[in-house]
Image (cartoon, rainbow over all chains, first blue to last red; front, side):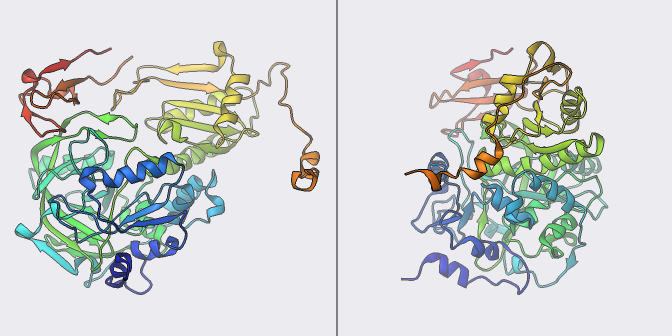
Length: 474
Length: 53
């Protein structure tokens, strides 16, 4: 009996030389540490998908998992497999940025930041794989997708990939990860929090016009990684994504708005929809990046106009509030902090935004300190530069910022609470009810150099190099 | 400590608790229970926990 995975792959219509999701999965499919499949039927709305992912996570295993035979929201076998956990390791994040896996540590954020400048203008094609199949009218039923319900208190199934939108009269596109609640077959609320997409929404609302928007439910990982860095207003994120892909993003006229809205031709599944200014619906709770529930609120309603998909399409999902969700945001921010401090201070050697801080709220920064006040200076500059950063710990360059016990050793050993901990109060209101609220905490955990102070013990490096246990132990 | 105001609502139908943004407390909009999909106004909740810092 041939595996369902094989039948999915054989029915795909990839374009030679063009990067797509299926092609990437093929590169990791042979390694069980990187990729696993589930051929038995699963019900994503009954937490079957996240139940398996949670078990893997708790056992320290982080493979990408392809669920080959999920049910749709109606409870019928879905036409589409669903893949999740794709970015759950820094190594696969490196893959998705076209960066060697050997640079998956502190260098990765920097490489991402460098790649943002390597834009490639998109090209327009007329024969788009993603439009091989088109559902319109009553057929455009988003409940036919294998929508995943992630956490216990979630309001329902949520599509966790990105929306793309452009401002009225403009031809640059913003691509932002959002939550799209599958409230009904015809549509549901979308939570838009990014500054640029919120601005686009406001501009459309001001004109009182219906807002065209698409939900992209799968593409090559490099496409997504290219959309994660903060770029200035006016940047076309399709061009940024092309730089990460190493080839121009191929775009095609949408089936709903034609040339007025271009869609990525090599995506897996696209929902074309419209937001009517002022129309809102209930969304949330949802288990978010903070590993807490976002409270129930109102969000713009997106009504489905059409669903298009390639032959053999795979739907992509992000395991919210877990490693891939955290790494997707933390690595670009690490690069942003590194570049900012390198430009201003010139002394930064590594940055890590640890999973313990959800990849958003805490930064460990290593510097080669030139003056005693640079620790505090670096912390202040990082906190001012990156939104949502709540705790900044600066250490010396002999501390491994990717080893949390090493960082906490520096905190326990070097920090004088009366002089080395600062709080910045009364910043902007928090978006989530987190402990620190609008206050930021800065810790200078570098070794004091303005007073006589002990150094860290060490076994002589030549002895460590010379006395290899495998040669000496009986 | 400044935090966004939220409250817990207890569904009058299934008695499960869920988290709601403070903006919906007096908006006249029915909440949707994530556990049983019952719709109800906050004032009709079986219980509200509105404590805040």
